[in-house]
Length: 189
Image (cartoon, rainbow, N blue to C red; front, side, top):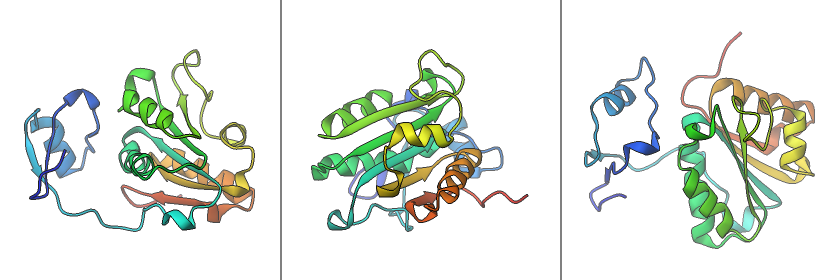
């Protein structure tokens, strides 16, 4: 929830939406010091990791995240529900276990609110409770969409996940289908 002055109130520590980066000043402070009721003042969102305008959206929207990368992608899902988007949308989230999935009940509610919404979970540490077994690969892409050439992917997550998604799409000649948000610099070999 945000206030008119740009403040945001942290209500529920159970969402675990902030993961401390060992070298991060803000994330370390939030994890170590912030408690329910803490007021945080934020600047307006900026950047180019945004959904296209409704008239520019074509095909299947795939919102793909891992770990705390869920935050910007979840905001896209919320916007699609608020707009009454009626095209196909698949939200894919990777985590170790079901207990590690932030906002799970909200993800279920929001994807169910979309006429063609679907939620897939890739639980890398629990093969019994997962929709997608293992880490992202060609087979996962085929389970997510039957036509990768017609989808638009919005991706945010840990570097290994992002690298895998980029490689699979590049190998299929579809690198232009992936838009991503990095929390840091891309990995260098």
